Length: 54
Image 1 (cartoon, rainbow, N blue to C red):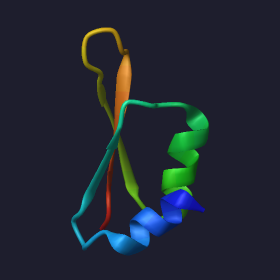
Image 2 (image 1 turned 45 degrees about the vertical axis):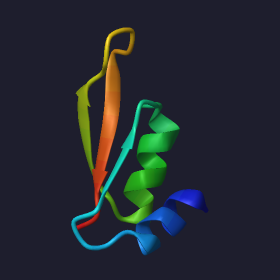
Image 3 (image 1 turned 90 degrees about the vertical axis):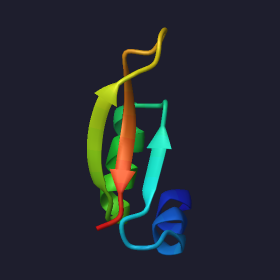
Image 4 (image 1 turned 90 degrees about the horizontal axis):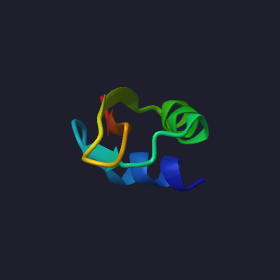
């Protein structure tokens, strides 16, 4: 899965950011091992995600 590959490639403390805050994306990042944070989105978007490899 793409999110697991991103997790494997990132260094410890690496950050993955997405303007897509859909539940399926959040769950995929969480399953891959990321710590997830919901952030206010840019103008026109309600939320965005920040995933950190810990």
